[in-house]
Image 1 (cartoon, rainbow, N blue to C red):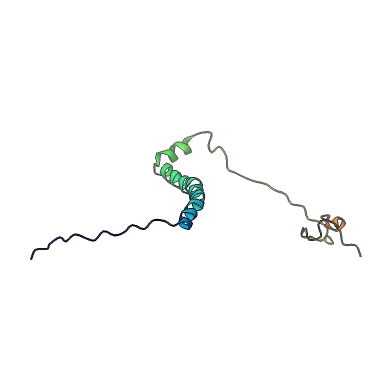
Image 2: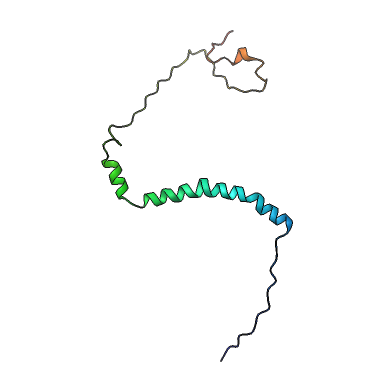
Length: 107
């Protein structure tokens, strides 16, 4: 059986309406920001991570890791009668006397 190639009817191309053009125009900055600040750093990081020799070079560098990392932070406890008050700006900071931290309860 032989197939005969019949000419197809030309499909009319739809043009964008004014609203669709405005929508594309207003979405363009968001897409550009997403590409520049999200997709580019991720792909660049994956591109840098593809070579294991860079990790060997980094860990063999004498400046990179000289001693273990330790972070020390000392917290002071208040007196047992102290209250912890949440800060909220519901009163427009009119009642500032009661918003002072670590004040003992006065009864």
